[in-house]
Image (cartoon, rainbow, N blue to C red; front, side):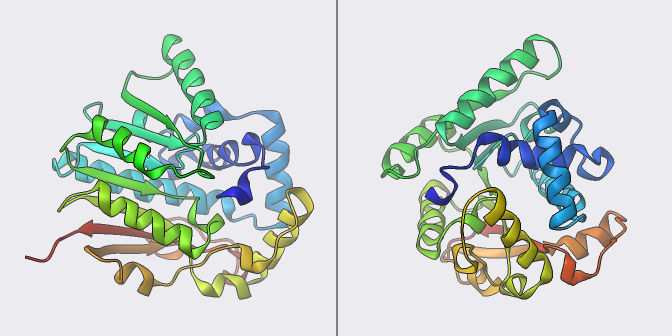
Length: 281
């Protein structure tokens, strides 16, 4: 995860929140606008011009899909805890039922800043109270033993949903394998994982080439091999998990009546997966 270590907070966590705020009706996120700021807005306008103007809609639909999925599972009492890996400034806790327990995991500087802003907005009555637990993790260290203990202390034996979005693209295959093995340690039979990732064909698209140029100009010098893509077969092969739902930007656009403005080659088409842990008897 060290490829992002030099990227400033406003270039990552603020980024996604700003996209979600651009179309509240589509994202169903009425709180994302709290994170808006002029510096990020200027950065995003440049991004939309140079990479893909469709990005506001892709981020909104990602939020909408996972929000609706988690909401339905919580309503049917299948989950009681949401564990968000790489939580950034996402606002799921305030869009979901207050009965859910939330474990927000990210770099210490991100969760500390988020916790202070959330407390401020709650004191100002801009946000409702929620059962929130922030866990700062230095992913460059051997963090898993300590993090597992922290999660289990909060979660106990309650059923959970693990969410990982906007993260895997920046990892390598070994780090990703390690994360899903870690998820398996955290979870028990009947628990869920929600994951967002890109497929291999992304890298042959015009949109990806534009993204790479933009990142090389604005962030750091990287190459195509620095970004991870995963095929459906990866999720289908995970031990102890069954793939129960798979969507992408195009399928969700049909579901939520979103108008697609660009040709597929000019869109960073992200895929969304829901896995259920189901041990063989």
